[in-house]
Length: 301
Image (cartoon, rainbow, N blue to C red; front, side, top):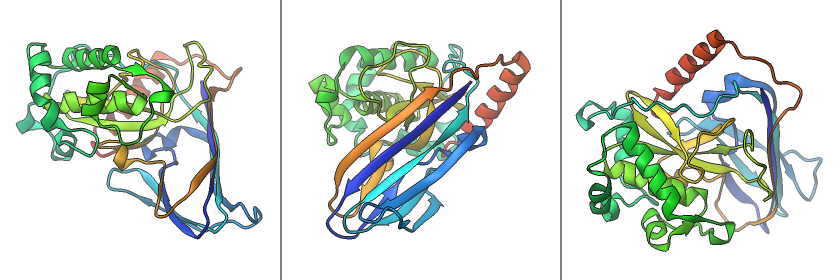
């Protein structure tokens, strides 16, 4: 299948304001792009004037842009079409944990506590609750299901300062809070876990009537590769498009502003391009799975 994705974000600012954005499709998925419109940055005061930007790869392998919004504000937009084989997230019940002493060095950063993931505060609870669960896939799934059941989802609960420990106590949150709590509990159990953000279209599930937003989920490192888990939905989903990975949300803000700004427009789309479905052969599926596994094996990517 093919999925159309994109966004249009306007921000207002009173003075020139430097920004760093993480709005590009992650390099690990760029080979699947069949149509791509590069990010455009235009001054709101003069839409005919493009704004300079520079692109680089950050420490997690994400594509990051540096832009200075002019006084008056900035309009950011990008989009395209990406090929997706149309299979739900991989489920691998036999995947086992990798002992800490055998983990690739690049994964160790995803065992540490971080800004929103306080492993020191939740370690005792994690071991009490999940210590008797068989190591491996079943333990990560038990953590995912626990977080799914403990937290109530609602956009009215959004708070950008909420940490995993606070989400555990408050029992509410949005997708980033579900991801942070699950990541923290995995790390407490010596399982590397990383934060992922990107697009999640409503494919194979009832359409969500709420306006579309970017989504957050997490990946756990088992048997030498990264596997996707989603504590908010707690079910395999179709069509995830990763933009960025990090230790937690602090590493992957879509816009990091070095000055005051106001969000005046925020639109996100991700939807199947109808009429372009086609069968995917078993051989193609194996080839795509092998390619994906190879990319996931690169822990920082």
